[in-house]
Amino acid sequence: MAAKRWQPGTQCVAKCDHTKPKGNEIAYLKGDILTILDVLETGKSIFRARHNRTGEEGVLSASKVREREVLRVDPNLSLMPWFHGKISGPEAVSKLRPMEDGLFLVRESIRHPGDYVLCVSFKQEVIHYRVIYQDSKLTIDSTQHFYNLIDMVEFYSKNKGALVTTLQKPKQKEGARSAALQLYKTGWLLDLAGLTLGESIGEGEFGAVYEGEYMGRKVAVKNIKSDVTAQAFLGETSVMTKLQHKNLVQLLGVILHNGLYIVTEFMAKGNLVNYLRSRGRSVISTVQLLHYALEVCEGMEYLECKKLVHRDLAARNILLSEDNVAKVSDFGLAKVDSQAFDNTKLPVKWTAPEGLKNKKISTRSDVWSYGVLLWEIFSYGMQPYPKMSLQEVKEQVEQGYRMEAPEACPPEVYTIMRDCWEKEPKMRPSFHKLRELLQAEVTKHESSTGS
Image 1 (cartoon, rainbow, N blue to C red):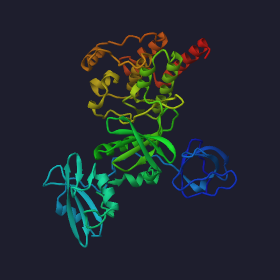
Image 2 (cartoon, rainbow, N blue to C red; image 1 turned 30 degrees about the vertical axis):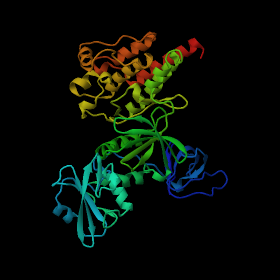
Image 3 (cartoon, rainbow, N blue to C red; image 1 turned 90 degrees about the horizontal axis):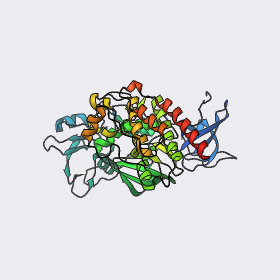
């Protein structure tokens, strides 16, 4: 077997249990995630690794693990491969062949728009169960209620309930690929049994965010209950599996339950805008503000080199860790550099003029947003363009208006903001250049304050 040439930082998935380690070996269970720290013996593929859950470090043989793969963005990847859309009852019957007990699919109801039909094969016939949508929930028998189809199929796969049999084998729609299977194969599907949900720590645009614990590690959990939204968030998950950087919030994995749970590292100090507003200039120094600005810039420089556009860069989407490190989060709108997007989702006050006017979005549009984020940081979390309506912002910015410098903002930092707000995208600095400028500012201010 060829020696593995894994670099430090590579994540691996355990292929088997290793509960009786010898000497300085590391213990793990099948499915555990481990991060390579160092190469010990190249020829034998022996590494030093850290267990992502326990934090323990030790020796690891590459033969016992496989590399955690990225999840490729694939339009055919489906959380509901058994959902066939608007097909008739006879069509459903023709698809459930050869008939096996528990073979099933779900379709939209043609007779009752807004409802669904669960079609299950049993004893050489197909039974059609109407799934009624009432009070924002789904039900077959008015006793069991579900938030979505994913939840319903999960329940009836384990419990017979009102059905003639449990759901045993999904009939996949032609062309669809099971997201659950791909998540499992690539090592990103986490075990529901390992998750303990705590209290809600925020209400996102698409669902609640909870504090929680996964296998003993404190985590944040984004719960997306809507089928359609959960499916859309597969894109976010796919993007996040590719990204590893100290200034990006780290994805730990996903759980398919109650729709979709996206599990990330826990950021104890919450979002940057609230943190700045609640503490203010008497607590947070200019040097600390510069550090936040630099850390965000480093995360964005990494996205820039990956040719990824964030599209929603703002202080509300920057989270702070327990040890006060700023990390970019919320890749809900992130896509590979592309011009196809939904204009209604754009945050007007943070969006570059070409994005609002011509729907042109690029890394240089993120640079514009970064300029607004810098203004938020140095104003200690003020709302940009104070006292202006969204329509006024659109019109005034297009005509050349730019915000004044926040109170006590270093002049060099305001110059950087203005550079980010150049009307022509190509005239704006890259994140690489911005990082160099900010690094110089940090060094200058630290030497002048002796910190």
